[in-house]
Length: 106
Length: 341
Image: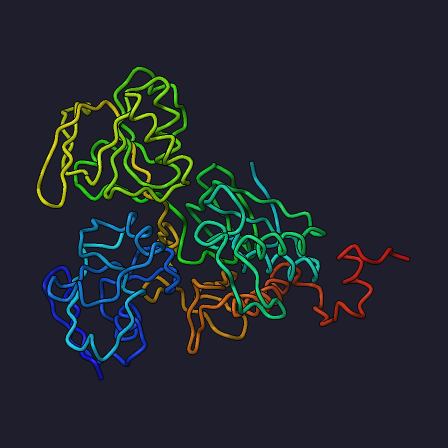
């Protein structure tokens, strides 16, 4: 099972096995990892599962679609490495992926 | 103003709306309060045009059409909606709950049904610390009176329709700078091209891809600094700073009512969806129990059961009778489909 590392804003690390086809957001929520709210439940409609993808990984992830890029406009402190956790689907290729959470989601 | 009713529903989303119908059928009157300026909750605010495929017997609908249909369904019950109002405070008064809203309305009711989704919608704010200091004193997230911006320097942040529309509108009589974090605006194509046209004519400045980095000024804002991710920064003179980043859901005052909470949700029993407080029920996304699914259809079921429990408290001396709409004259009269004999 692919391993995903979530880093809280305070630096605390969580490396967990996330089943393929779940999203990065679901992996966090199902494992009670703090820092990802997912208010809308994964509909790409609220930008509260905002993460910063590790620089080394950013270009290895399928590009965001327009709806996600639009939503990122309203995320808290977005950067060029920002993505929405609900739109990144875990695959074997993403084994080892590292994402960081913002200081808050809103 | 004091309003007495059988049930106060907090939240005008799909679950709150359907519960109005369930209450109406058993003869209970509900008043609905919502912090948004429109009916429909998340369905209207977040995804009016997005398709929904799992409403029973509706192969496909949208957030908007679902809301419209529910409003049609509750028409016979002539429900009052109190929009733009947030419930601030509740207190127990004999057998009733006293409910106070931000609009200074007071409700008296034996039952409160919280159908508030993930909380009330509030504007998303600037991430920098200084923004708080100047909020409502130079920094605004909505516009009540556009005239205060006349002949002033106004910086508008955001890339959606609100940001574009206000930039265009205020450019008539203010010195407007529109700032957005990327080059593309997500608002209507037409508005985006109007803004760019105004920029060419020198009536509006557009700064992309910039985000706010600091606010200057002591008692009043004098200017702001914006910067790119590459670290390029620029100072802009400003009297007012407007942020249009859409809305976010916050649990808000609900957290202060002495209800048990599990993260941002309220634990309930699955027999009648009552919380740890008698007469206060929670249904829809905001409630939690073993096996909870955050689906609209689950919220409908939860509302139907909570409604029956409300009957006991609203009509303590009457017996509740279970009836079907297909056969019951009483229910059909309440629905307005059968004339009383």
